[in-house]
Length: 501
Ligand SMILES: C[S@@+](CC[C@H](N)C(=O)[O-])C[C@H]1O[C@@H](n2cnc3c(N)ncnc32)[C@H](O)[C@@H]1O
Image 1 (cartoon, rainbow, N blue to C red):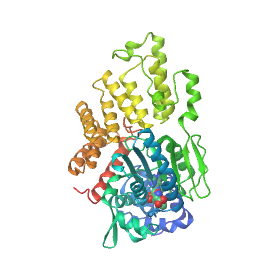
Image 2 (tube, protein in one colour; image 1 turned 135 degrees about the vertical axis):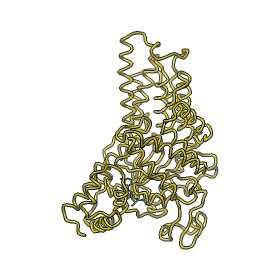
Image 3 (cartoon, rainbow, N blue to C red; image 1 turned 90 degrees about the vertical axis):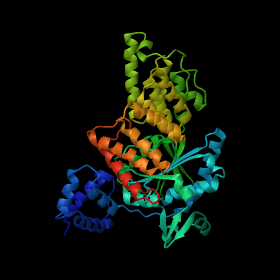
Image 4 (tube, rainbow, N blue to C red; image 1 turned 180 degrees about the vertical axis):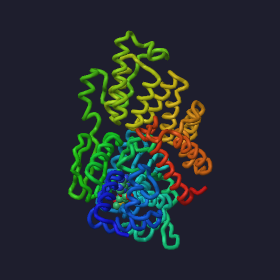
């Protein structure tokens, strides 16, 4: 079966649209091979029929997945790029760990975007185990995501051939892996530290509390942009800036293109390697704050974000409004706030929400928005307080219970998180994101039959919704996309060793 030039070009175009992946000339024979095998596997008459099937559906169908798995380059190994690993081991991680200790916030959140079989994020888990003697007291959130679900299933399994250890010292291999036939299995202690999921950097939404891509300290996205088109790279970098806490860093691969223009991310380079650091909120915005609301902000983040609201008995937002003009002004400000939150512009959103609160207007939903913003910049305890305030103003605010559950789960307060999700579901049994999160809590507790029940509930509800409509609590994800990703995740969970039903 042949693949003529125009059909080949159409496959390449489709791949760029759906994944951002640009195939180079030397990869075209691999594309042809994948298309040929895909035709056999899915019983397409020829490449044209395969192409039409892909063009007609925007879903992540098995034929599209097969194509993606065939053309992505999943090459990875432990402790790849010694300069970057030294940077993490000797500088970035020790500095972050010391700063967190000094502030009393014992948490670290790291995302490997384009994680392949997980070697990169497991290498970080090993570094953390070696660098933090009291690690059990910390909340360590390590996550790996990839567009190729085959490699993610392998990451969940955690077994590797000898070739994956070509840059690993014998000491680390002996300490953290157990030989099983021809493979080495990662230590269960490390496996438990990392979560994996499906995420397409080009079309999926991040940051999102739901995919846990918010309030990150480090994003590793090494050797991924080299395969993507410029537009996809720019989008990802802009989104990464929103995913990071102030001072957080993005590390790209040594061969990845680095010509971005993003005001919030500055390139820091030494003679051997480099990374992007998110410019501090204070350096960038303090002048704006002091100008708009003079005299109330100190240099401490906690004071900045937790502006005290005039004490008043709980009452509805409408009653606090003095006049029709006031209401119109607040409506306008609320519209602006919603837009800032939709754009994941957390810092401006925080300024805006505090401005509205300072004007004396408060409502359950406003505090819920503040909680969402705080959660996204990593101020989890303050986010929790904002949720509590929201619930005081409206004891049946199901979305606040849901948000509270997410924050509690991030704080590793799992029974309390389960209780919050239960309350959400008590108020609205069709709240599909709460079924999903309850399922994820059960995955963490290794209650896999309970987890699958919740995930199946969530999937059933997602399939019932209009696939084009956006979900309320999944940062722009549609019902259709949510269902696809969830199906993928369930498949990966079923495939991963130790998490079988
Ligand atoms: C060469 S591997 C890099 C693995 C690891 N980061 C490292 O440096 O060792 C590139 C990975 O990027 C993934 N990838 C490519 N396009 C992607 C996209 N649009 N979204 C998410 N992952 C993608 C591929 O599936 C592949 O696993």
